[in-house]
Image (cartoon, rainbow, N blue to C red; front, side):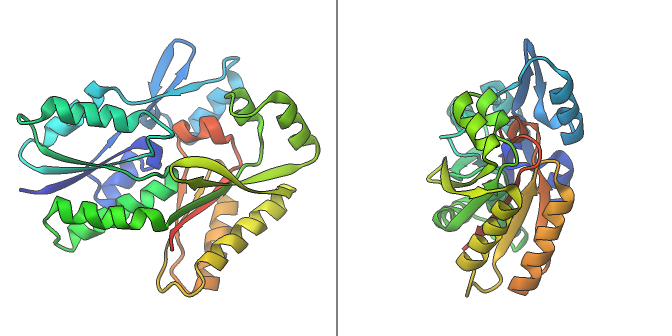
Length: 280
């Protein structure tokens, strides 16, 4: 009986990256423009940013359906499935996966669910760790799940937004607060804390915020041997690559993997966002 690793698109693991890593399946969330729902994995980030610029309608996101999860799980009827997902505080994806697991109980694969309490690169790091355990020959889904659960409190995801406009349009902050933030060039340094997005600091200007992001990561990783690090970005590839290179030099590690935020994340982050995730 094989162990199958399943995740969702809010980890920013694309089908292509899944094949490279050895992830068995990625369940897609949706981006919704008016009455048109598009699986986020069917849009490249550049296509999505173009649609954002051209559409008069601000998009929303929608979780995968229970049926979407069932369809994926049923591919692995003879196996054990470890299904690793975005924080339930940020998406209903985990609830869909949970309902699908109950529906298939007794007539489908053995399914173990993990709420990473993370998003994007933070969740992706935990998925990558699970895949590496499978590759090392660990043949117990329960053992892998227990290890991943032990890493969740040590996993960090800090990020900076270049614009507050998407948060405003998505109703996350008020228009006056967004206007003042943009006028004063205040850039929020945000973090994922217990599954929720929380403010860490506010910094004047985007460049200073990115510098502070790097300082926070380097301080928390001081003394950590061979830290697992990942850099994410939303339409800011060069900045992310420069950040990854500097982190590698300062920490004495191989350059961290750089992943680009997909549509389901970009709806909220907007273009220009950059973040660092790591297991401390």
